[in-house]
Amino acid sequence: MTVLIVGAGPTGLTLACDLARRGVPCRVIDRAAELFPGSRAKGLQPRTLEVFDDLGVIDAVRAAGAPFPGFRLYAGHEVVWERSLYDLLGAPPLEPGPATPYPDPWLIPQWRTDRILAERFAELGGTVEFGTELTGLAQDGAGVTAATSRGPIRADYLVGCDGGRSSVRKLLGVGFEGDTFETERTLIGDVRADGLDGVFCHMFSQAGDVTKRVSLWNLPDSPYHQFVASMAADEVPELTLDGIRGLLRERSGRTDIRLHDLRWISLYRLNVRLVQRYRTDRVLLAGDAAHVHSSASGQGLNTSVQDAYNLGWKLASVVGGAPDTLLATYEAERLPVAAGEFDLPVHRVAGRGAYAGLDTGAGTFALVRPDGHLGALSTSAAAIRGYLAQAGPPAR
Image (cartoon, rainbow, N blue to C red; front, top):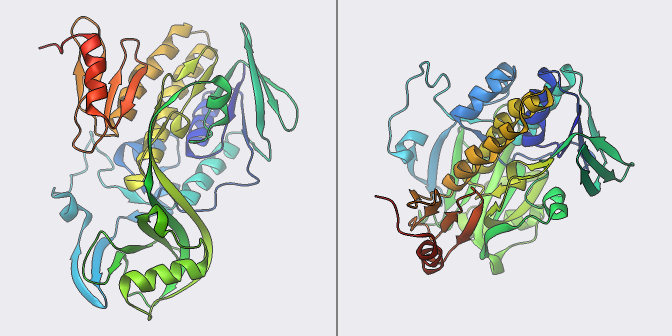
């Protein structure tokens, strides 16, 4: 029995490694010509580090990254303050122990995480088939036939790990409920920067106003910095080296920092979305194909890796003869976690087993139906309360 994985990002590669080490034949296809080249999601959280330990890549991840640096805020040339990650969180560092063997977040650019996972998959006998685009899929009682740009592929199960614009999700016709915040954009890129002192998340502003800043993060063991800036949609500069140079000058008032060698750049819209269901018969969704988040704190990457880890052993067990009902626990366990990344408090609805997210304080609200599927995700509290009124009063 075989599994076809669509998408060779952190989600697909984590799943591929987990299946391969369990002896489950799998194929990984990706329409891109190579692994993702940018730093993008650069922070690994403690639970993700535990997953990577179990997959046999923790030493490589530790060698290729570093603890989170301090944060330094500038007003022009003046340093306003320097603070640690824990200062900003308002919490003391955790001590390592059996429950948290890796208590500290780890800074590592995404391109390195992808490369480490791809190398581990290769050690386990796998190969990523780049330049292979999914164009269609059909299911029957025995498996899935995927139409691709290089011909059909037959598999027992197919897992869509192909990101927020997932072709798998669209081909399934699965709803992707939520909101896109059209008024704001975040620009992220990898660039060399001369003239910076020390290893920090350097936050530049003209008057210490963090709402109008440009951040340059030192990337571990690399000449590149990650450039990050948020702005109104109508203020987006050209996505070029000159464009980000101008933005840095405008927001910092400084001309002594030289940006050069722009390696990668992208513009993000803030999306908050969840799928209506994680599974349609023999096709499953994982990672950004199932949920998208803010780019802050690496929410998407960490949640996605943990999706794959939850699914891997279950899929391997079913392929090995375990009851197919085991796969139902994947959605039941992971959907509430994804909803929780939106800071949605959860309440049981009496007699229905449904869950509803009420006012988050962040302007987002959600309801999960009794079958575990997302019933609604909205920026309207009134809309969610309307769903709740139909479902029944909250249990006490």
